Image (cartoon, rainbow, N blue to C red; front, side, top):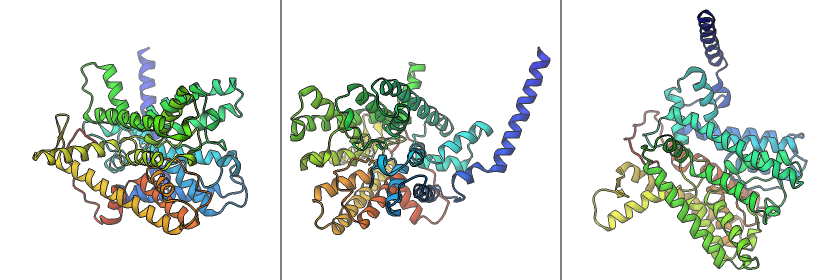
Amino acid sequence: MKRYSRILKIFAARMRRFLIMAALRVNLENILSLGYKSDMPQKQLAVGYALYAALGAFLLSLPFASVSGISIVDHLFNAMSALSTTGLTSVDVSVNYTFAGQMIILLLIQIGGLGYMTLSSFIMLGITRHLGSAKNNIFTSQFSLPDSMCGQSMVRNIVKFTFFFEALGIVLLYPYFLFHDVESPLWSAVFHTISAFCTAGFSIYTDNLMRFRDDIYVNIVIMMLCYMGAMGFIMMTDIVKKFRDRRYRITFTTKIIIRITCALSMISTLHLYYCEPSLQQYEWGKRFMIAMFHSVSAMTTAGYNTVDLSHLVPISMFVMSFTMYIGASPSGTGGGLKSTTLSAIYAYTKNKLGYRGDISLMNNLIPSYRVETALTTFVLYTFVLFSGIYLITMFEPDSADIMKIVFEASSALATTGLTSGILTMITVESKIILILLMFIGRVGVISLGNALLIRSHEQKRMMNDDLAV
């Protein structure tokens, strides 16, 4: 037995060396980055996503993927929306794209949700057991992580958590869809599970999820998937560690994520329940479910809807726009300003009003560079949003009111996907502005600014901290 065990160990070691050499020869990283390589992580991300969006638009424009008559701008719009996990669509996906086209859209959603370099990092890490400094820098540029968490372990956790919850969603939805005679039950379960966890909001139905408005089970499953994707892998990792070791201390980032997520969800839900006239026609239980579903959809930047949002009154559109503006949490699949950025700004304002020197929140000291990053993100994000609103309003002087334009621009930049119903009426110029907003929302305002302005690849390493902004 010892002899056979030794032979197996030798065989395993040789196979490992063979796989390492094969991976190095194939150069998986160059393939997945479409041949572009930069020593600056922010530029690598920005150009990488732009190349993937262009490739996605090209594939969607091919005859086997879509019907004729769709412009290249619409293909680019939908490809960028899928890659940025937004969910805004300029044409009906269920009608204008074939099964192959929907598969391409789903693949773009998965790439966008995971981060286009995460899967390659996971494969290379499994083969070589080493992430490499360059790939680690790109990975940490995609997901803001507190320095108490190891980048290599987070790569593994992100892939494992993603496929675990996606598999769970399919297991929960497929039998239910099959029993209730939903068309293409397996494909519907796969598509909507991945889209929900990646907070993409794409649907293969013309009415999005309006047909499931009265279905409590489907609403709960979709909301659960959206929450798990948007609240982030930091929180998931913390919870798993806490279950394994009761003495483990939950990170400050996770505490902030949970508190702000719950508060924002409750505020938006209560407003829609009590103040939205279009929901008053439903009995109280159904009205609460609709209000909560759309609050979760906006806060997690998932973008699914079970009622027609074009009927919302301006104040409700404003509340939902603000909810989308704040958005999800760091290291998750959602977009927006991020909950931890809001918490850092709140701590800064509170401490300055109290004439305190150090910036702290919940008895945790926040280093000045984290606060500066949060303030810079807030200024840039707000500037980009108002610039987008201004430009779209300039191109749409008569076709839509300003509140719907604010709603649409907020949805695009936060990569949410909720729509006020004006997408089919806007001009090509406005669609291009929305494409740019979705791209900026996916790459991040700080990363894009660094990619455009920083010329040197030498960047200072930040101090350690337990709050990811």
